[in-house]
Amino acid sequence: EVQLVESGGGLVQAGGSLRLSCAASGFTFDDYVIGWFRQAPGKEREGVSFIRSSDGSTYYADSVKGRFTISSDNAKNTVYLQMNSLKPEDTAVYYCAAGAVGFAGWGWGEYDYWGQGTQVTVSS
Image 1 (tube, rainbow, N blue to C red):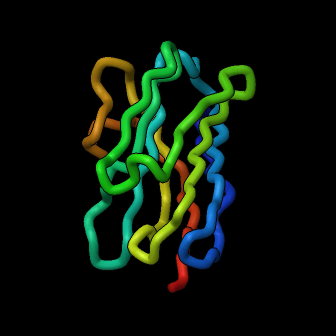
Image 2 (image 1 turned 180 degrees about the vertical axis):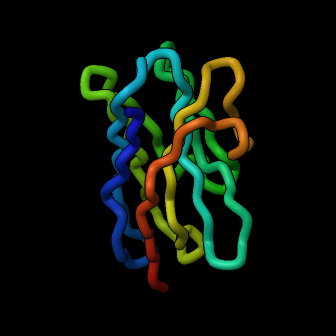
Image 3 (image 1 turned 135 degrees about the horizontal axis):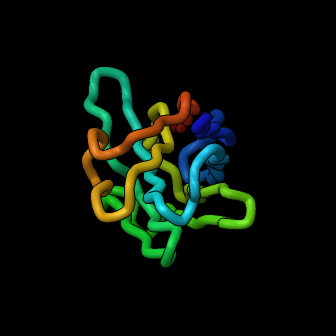
């Protein structure tokens, strides 16, 4: 059974940091792209960052570039999203997702498996 379990969300003041984790099981980690998406109330789900586990290639949305860092620990089948210099507009439910290498990218419809989400709230 494929599972993606996010953790690490919470409430933080603007300028603070959080590290999200996405623990994956039930599939071959290297065959997938792991992406982080977020969805704020009343807004569409948007791609934040993704990593291709096989070669470590990373991609970031312009809105988080320079502030967020995605990384993976392939031995633990876990992907992390280090979020620094958080802003109130980063407030959202953050989801991790897994999609096939060569297909999955910025579109949320390109991913096959999803976690349950973790709430990130940044106060001003």
